[in-house]
Image (tube, rainbow, N blue to C red):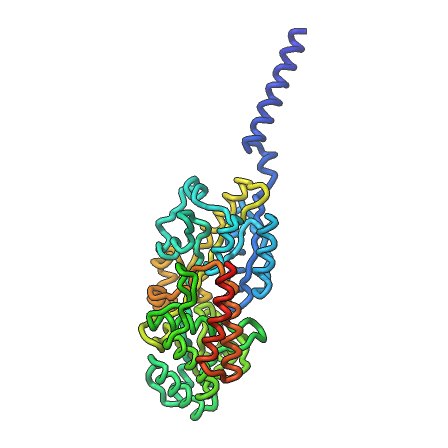
Length: 425
């Protein structure tokens, strides 16, 4: 009997030990559960999409503890889908949020503060470019980590410029117009490829140029502290009129010109200049026979500087936060920023100092110049109303250019509309 009891006790102890090991993740059965699976929504569908997808594939290939499952959404639908999911606390484990769009999400409490998790993981926070990382802080808390900085720049077709006898990259508005006209006259190519219609996307490029112009003149679009517009000035009217004149007075920008056409024409060698973000670089580099140069956006209206945005990676607040998934999600985010030289292939500027010092990054064409451009960025205003303001300003600048509207009238109409929007926030 005693022998039987001893045997039973041994079996019981073994069972207890096995159960404790399973709880601690120390048995083969626990290991058999496989890697942690995390979900991710991406908005990268343009020229940089393939580079991002390659990074995700490399992350999954490089380790076996985490598997990232991606779902790509069209940019025009992304924030509607994201807002619905965040509000219902049914979002994926990791999301992309533009720095300009973060504030409303932070205020509504749907983004998870990363500070404690970063500390627990002993993450190299000091390796991030301070300005880029600090821009993702609100009330002293880190709500996302910046994957990149992407300023507006200018692309130039070197062959078309040479054929037209243009030997100098334009540095002023008058020089740009003159060079564009010369190329059109000598070669028949498009002078400046700037999208200005919502046929594919909203005409965001017009607003980005307008923000750049306001900043170059020492002004801004919105006074965030006073929650008031700041562009209804003589300088604001000058920038708006110059934009309208590019298509209507000078004829160097095609009207009703959508984003995909502007990119496609430059890629095909049919345009002398192209204004876009750095994200277009990778696609242009892959185009056989395209001899181009990428330079900082010229100081058309004052001092150097250009609009710049930032893709940031954030962790949504869920109905029940799983610490294992939070750690896995943050591991993915840190890996992506640590391998920013892969993302730089798309043209973006890395946000980790260690990446900027990698030989692979230093050897890339154009990118060192981008780093300099990032030092004089002109960000979008820090207001929760920005997403709505951004869309409406783009629509109204599109209307002004399409209808050759007087700049004074265009600015007055924008001022009225934006003031109405700001009053609701």
